[in-house]
Amino acid sequence: MDHSIIVVGAGVVGLNTAIALARKGHDTCLVDTGVPGAGTSYGNAGIIANYAVMPLITPSLRKSLVPMVLDRDSPMSIQSSYALRLSKFGRYFLRATRQREWEASGYSMGSLMKDAWRCWEAVLEASGSTSLVKSSGVVVAFEKPASFQEFLDIEAQYKKAFDIPYEPLDGDEVREKVGVLRNTHSGGVFYPDARFAVDPYALSRHLFEHYLAIGGQFEEASVEAIRSINGGHTLTLKDGELSARQVVLATGNATKSLLKRIGVDLPIASERGYHAIVDSPLEMARPVGLANHGVFATPMKNGIRIAGLSEFARHDAPASRRRIDQLERIARHHFAAGIRTPWVGSRSTTPDGVPYVGGFRHHPGLWVNTGHGHLGLTLAAVTARALAEEIDSGLAAQNPFSPHRHL
Ligand SMILES: Cc1cc2nc3c(=O)[nH]c(=O)nc-3n(C[C@H](O)[C@H](O)[C@H](O)COP(=O)(O)OP(=O)(O)OC[C@H]3O[C@@H](n4cnc5c(N)ncnc54)[C@H](O)[C@@H]3O)c2cc1C
Image: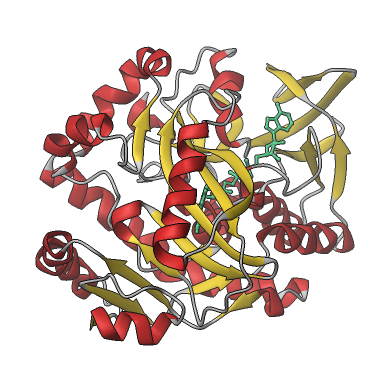
């Protein structure tokens, strides 16, 4: 065997996983097709959203899904040619929107979220990256009074149940907390314990340097297939092979096709998101979620980044002009400015909004850490710790994050 563990995928999830394993003394090799941190982890809104316990796939989405998808200005869309690929995903998705299932998913997420920041804090300190994350809290603002009320009536109950501090705000207080925003909000919520990364790509680069410094190895290669042999696994690369006793797939969206080749059909959807920089040197005190537009505006190192939207589409389809125009309209509406340098990336999303973190009964030594959807930055350090512990202790009989819940 070339290594004891190979982690495939050097996004923020794979980097944290490789660090957690290397710190436990495993001979670890990280493999990525390209530059670490340059995939989806490059372009997120930067929020460490440890308040976001209840999955976005809510029971009310059952009724609002079709009108939402048909509305041109809705933050959510499904590319018609891609919809046909979502039959298994769709079945589990509908199940996940039942009240009882949604609450169960929320409790699973809550058990991760309570340690999400503590795990990040340890990694940031060890890697010398604390200056890349700010602790200003985050505001989520609502334009439509009905959606603000719905939030206060339903979601707020769960925040209380999970002991998540928050402060309701009126429209003027939203503006006071955020700064530059035009005053179009009926209300909002302030989460004082949320944090944000000022440069998500620089954060991944710091993690990568730290991983190398603690003895981790890196191989730039594209993994094309996996085979189980002699109590381990062999990865077929474009040029050659690599083998290890254990393999972790932290390959985001590509995990679905890699698993399919060994007969594992895990329902992972490609849910694309967009970002752009507001083309004006405005200053904001802290990030704001523009709830009715499905985006965050985050004061990053290179300007205000508007990031979000939800487009179910092939990960490699061309960027949609319509979505970029949508970001432009949001920027004009809230900041009276245009946008520059639009970017599109693909989240790996599970039907219940809970990541897949665990192994496979029929493929001992093969593990996944993927499906983090909208919360990969938030959950990267805590899911890395959870997986590293499971790898050391052996496949857990009871694991709410196990991929087996959808196999
Ligand atoms: C617009 C937008 C805004 C977001 N905002 C937030 C936010 O504010 N907060 C938050 O918590 N999350 C947010 N997210 C989600 C978050 O960015 C993702 O969940 C996270 O980046 C996923 O990380 P990853 O490591 O799983 O995937 P990636 O960053 O995509 O990394 C996967 C890596 O695997 C490699 N790879 C794939 N296939 C192979 C192969 N066959 N061989 C070798 N290497 C391979 C790729 O090259 C890539 O480097 C947002 C996402 C988007 C799109």
